[in-house]
Structures are given as structure tokens and as C-alpha cells.
Length: 106
Ligand SMILES: [Zn+2]
Image (cartoon, rainbow, N blue to C red):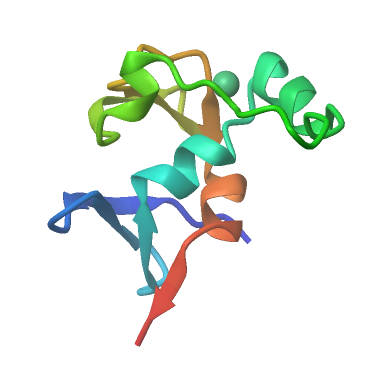
């Protein structure tokens, strides 16, 4: 099946709405998209074992601020690259990945 986004829309506080060519609508939080970033660096990070207990995770200033999406750019006709307010912009979100994420709206 070949579905593609027909509409991207900011849906209020930290949320993105994508309407799809088959009529489906999905809602995403910026955090969810960021946490599922498909770039090699983030994939590696997610596979690391959690920090030993007793250590506090230290967030950088950018990470501690509310996350925003600054820009979404189409990549070919199969994906979007997303630039986040924490400075990260190397993730290429394929339509397939975007379809797996998010909450389907009725
Ligand atoms: Zn990444």
C-alpha cells in the first residue's frame, strides 16, 4: 500500500497532526517523534543499557526546554526530515515509520 501525508498541521501544544491519503488521521507528540528518531546516533543511544542506578541523567539546557518542531522538509517522495528545537535534525522519518507512530484519530 502506498499512502502519503496529504496535510501536516500543528495541533496545539507540542502536537502534530498528519492527514493521510487513505483518509486516516494520526496525532503525534513532538516528544514521541524525537524519541523515535531513526538516525544512526539515536538508534545506538536507544540500544545502550540504562545508566547505573544512583546516577542522575543530566539534561543539557536545550533538552530541558519544551521540545518544538522548527521545520519539516520533504525528502524525495518517501520521507520527511524534522528539525527539532534541541538542535537535532538528522532523522529521516519515512512515511512507513510515521504510519507506525502516533495515535489514530477517529
Ligand atoms: Zn536522531
